[in-house]
Amino acid sequence: MKKAAFIILLGGLCTTAFAQKRSNGDGAPLRQLSAADSTRVKELFFSAIRQKTIDNTRLATELFGQVLAIDPNNDASMYELANLEKAQNNYQAAAPLLEKATAVSPDNEWYWLALADSYEKANDLVKLHSAFDQLIRLNPDKPGYYFGKASIYSVQRKYDEAIKLYDKVESITGPTDELQSNRQKIYLIEGKVDKASDGLEKMLESNPGDAKYYLMLAELYNSNGLNDKAIAVLNKGVAALDKDKNTGLSYGLLHMALADVYKDKKDLVASFNERKIAFANPDIDIEQKVRVIQDYVPQLANPTLKTQVLDLSRILAVTHPNSDKAFAIYGDMLVQTEQFREAKPVYKKSIALNPQSYQAHEQLVRIEMAESDFAGAIKDGENALSYFPNQAWMNYLVGVAWQQSKNYNKALGYLKNAAGLETDDKDLLSQCYSAMGDCYHSISDNKNSDDAYEKALSYNPDNGFTLNNYAYYLSLRNDNLDKAAAMSKHSTELQPNTASFEDTYAWILFRQKNYTEAKVWIEKSLAHDKEDSAVKTEHYGDILFFTGDPNGALQNWEKAKKQGGASPALEKKINEKKYSE
Image 1 (cartoon, rainbow, N blue to C red):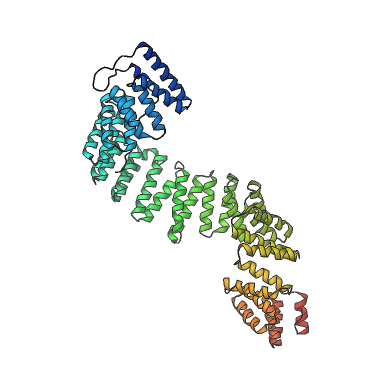
Image 2: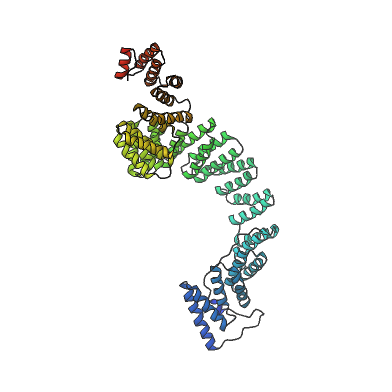
């Protein structure tokens, strides 16, 4: 059986029991204690209360027990003992004590409340029903007791009885939102949407300027498939609030609700138009608007929705010009729509408003890196690190920016920081050590370069760029060519049709004097090359020379020179018409 949520209003200490009219449960008065016993009972009782107050539960329990040993019908001690049992979640032991307490003092409201709570915890609806009857008897003007009893009827599916009790409450309190909500739940369970809406219609008649009733009624209609009725109610609300010149939170919420209903109707144009009105309302919480934008993100493959979300995020930034979150979201949507250049100033505005928001910093630096704006990435990245020095990814990005700017020692400092800060992200660690390997190679520190590449591959043995670079640099040194060939071949398998990887493999094969196979791979590389690389063309000339085509070799060396190749070795090859190291 489903457990109901009942309204139990429990109080604290009840010592008034001593002044209550008491019986032994059958109506006969209790025996009178002697003066000495009466004094002793009071001393023990208040000592027990003191021990309970200082959380000495064991001694308090013992003292209340001593009271009952002298006065077996001391209802106040039964009540206190029951509360101690309930504090230990021992409701089974508490209920008999409270049942006896209510038998001794049947008019003590506190006892019945505590007993009702025990019955609720035990999900004993029959006894709980009786307890509420007693509470209503004792306090017939207290709405909570009727609500509690009505909840029992609802669980038992005695909906008509529950409605009668709500009618009784209304005679005490007048119409309230709580009553309307409880009645509505029952009517909806019974499928009586018309009756569920009647109460809200009445509330609207009494409160035509209160937007919440339009919203509640529209939600009722919309959730039950009556979209057009929901739209009519919301438009009625908009008209009723028009005197406020279409401003204010209530007006904005009505348009937000209209957008939701039109969305459910699959009328995306109408939904968007309503959403724009709501987004231009500064009184609607920005978090609510952000959630709407986030709902769009999984659907950005739809060009129409992509345009809409970008427009909404722009309106968000205009409407909330002092919110860093508004600009950050706008920047994110510009990135989602691949408008990277436009996103940069938006992220900068977000950071200016709140430099403590890390994500905006990282997005800005990533855009600058993608645009090869390494000076900007260094400036903005180091600014970010002044606020977030322990962000591994930012240290990595700044390190790579310094590497691309050919300041390898500075780059190594940031890359080491990144690797030291990160422990779990193996992909980032692999990239950090790979970049370190590149830096060490650039300053001719071959041992540290090789060690860094080995570390990178220990975190990710399938890092294609690391495999390619490590293999290429080994080949330039004519060192460990078998290992270089294996790594290079693996990189071409991981990322097929990558011109630079194929060129590396061709060059290693050339170094191994496997000219026939080298020619196959250099031609693959040139077929996939989109940059007219002078290095690749020169390599092709070198390979052709050793495959018996000196004319073809010379043509490619000369072509490499036209493509920008300017090394002394290339000049020597052209002048002497033969291969030269």
